[in-house]
Length: 115
Length: 111
Image (cartoon, rainbow over all chains, first blue to last red; front, top):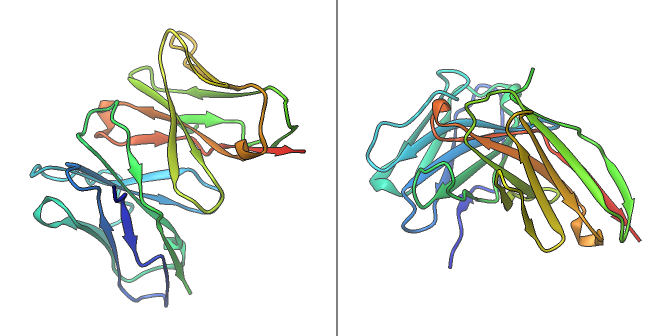
């Protein structure tokens, strides 16, 4: 079956511009996560959605970052007024439920470069 | 101090070698443990979960020592295709429900 998909694969933008990154989770998966992986760094948790519950935004680095999940499926991560330090690979993952032992399936990521 | 610490490597080994990776975690409330594998410029994929009793999957053996807050991964009879970065991953419910990743240990297997 289809895995997690993300778009665009690559995004180059200028400092100060807004960007939107999209994630399509695996069909039927109720939990969706966004992570960021900077060069030489581990994956950093950003935000988590579970069903219709309020999202866990505890990992968002600043108020320039926000995310939505419409209809319990597709999610969009928005970065406003991008900065050069926002350059990273943004990874989306989904899991069947939100249990800690659930396998998270990752999408291929969006490589963001802020000039 | 990072919550999940790994030796970054790289580990350079010949085919057929046995190699072991270690990982320590700082929060004793951690509940579940995993090893993920990430190929160059690819997304992470679950390699195996780690159980207290230790578990094996083919050439791969994972161990957990809760008292020492230590996790290990042993790879026997290394193959060229094992070359990748191995991520030690911890889950604890107190931090929301996301996973906490180590920076990874890079393995390069050569012929």
